[in-house]
Length: 144
Image 1 (cartoon, rainbow, N blue to C red):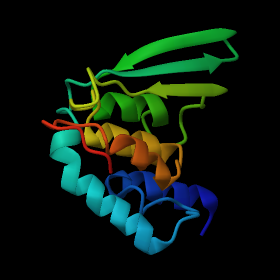
Image 2: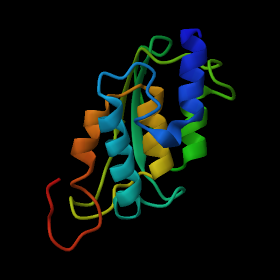
Image 3: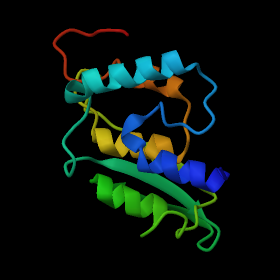
Image 4: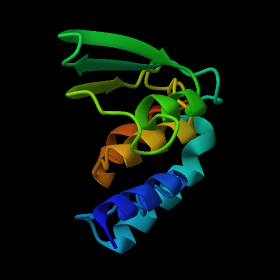
């Protein structure tokens, strides 16, 4: 199977992050554990789709500078990352994704669908979730 096909399949299964990563460096057992924890805690970690504030900062050679965009829904993010169809939009030279929360005990201002799509599209290692889990709606601070 070609890399392009593997990547396309991974993007179509974004909700399975991180078990859908094309070439994981972590064991299957750990990937499934991360996926289970992410699904178990998604109601306290993420806001509703459509009320998110995900900031992108992208450098495109055509403009010669960084441009920012604020994304509020999974569909808007999918179009921004992939174009109308996968591989129809050229990626910028550099892209920074900023995930916000009012504070560490509140939900992140990103939906579950947006986070898993962004992490899948960029094939981010599963260990980044260790930085996500301490956030979320909670009365007392917890460390995972």
